[in-house]
Length: 558
Image (spheres, rainbow, N blue to C red):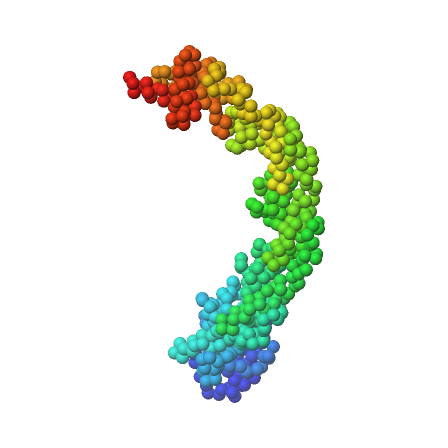
């Protein structure tokens, strides 16, 4: 101890120990966590080893400068700091040699409110916003690390220095971007690191220059999201597609680094050839099938079955299923391939003309009824249609359900075939001859007929006659007396006797009259003479017109 005291006296013989000053000290012991020194007081001081950047650079007996904060603590030991002495000595040096804007090297010491404390010779404040270009998730990762920093502000009064690491990083990246922009060319390939992934694409770091890899340029095939192909931090190969020097923007492509699968597509998948693929998407009008990465074909719902009506593709297919199909069309320019499933089987409609020739008599079950007709199943998947106009020669049928029901077994005649439109026209009325072709032999003007009232309207009553033909009694031909409402005089199901007063072949109509049914021969002859005179004078063509005219004359005479 005496030697140490002598050494101190020799180096500083008359210096008084004052708090707040830098004084010399001799290292007496170096431990794992503490360095013990003697400053000439009766007790030794203790300095945390953490205050020394490299404790191995110091040795016992070496003289160092320390900052004397207090001569004695409660236990009589001096409170001293090696770090504060260094900072006090370094402050003047830094002010003189490191103005604002200078680059300094430092070690992160600790966290503080709003940022980090960095030792650059003195303690400097590194705000959290100036640590990196992106806000760090944790500050602990920086403690103990050494970096270069830029001095952005010096406050002499408060002896405070603010530094930035972010500005150096940004400057470095700007230099890299400018260098990269001058070196890259459209069409060149390069490697980059995936920096960020979004729904619409990937941002790639090209050594300081950011490029956008759009999702449509990632793969020749179908992908739903970029993360199906890449991960953040992954190195990928890309091609430069576009360059905007002013905005420093670069458009990249990844699929362009590989061969376009649509090249020579027509030779690899000729029309009529069979292919195998996986269903990747279902839409209302069909199914998309991937036949190789980057090549998809569409199976339209119309190409799924020869005989069944497929309304939605999920009735037959599901996503992920492996299927076989036939190539039926290629649009290379639009990158479209039309596929068909039904073409894997023989077209049953090709045999329809042979199996169901026009004029053939068929029997089948009614599978469905619509407003315009009834569909009859001829065989599995083959239907014929009976139009409402082909049900009866004589009756006016407004809806097929008036005479037909679903699941009825009916007979019909094949009247037309169109295999290209997959249509077979059937007719029930064609099972018998058309009674109107021989109407003159069945009914004559002025002949008496008997029939049953089957329908009543506001203007007349319909009567079912022989041979299934209906006649119509106009309200004016029911009685000699005025009829206000037909239902007051006639009822459905009642049997009436009437005289034929009109036959209209073009309209397929027969006009009847009840009021003249009981005329005697003399009265009828008189009426016929009147009819003949009116016919030549006024070109009237039916007894109905004659009787209407006679009624008018009678009313005028009365």
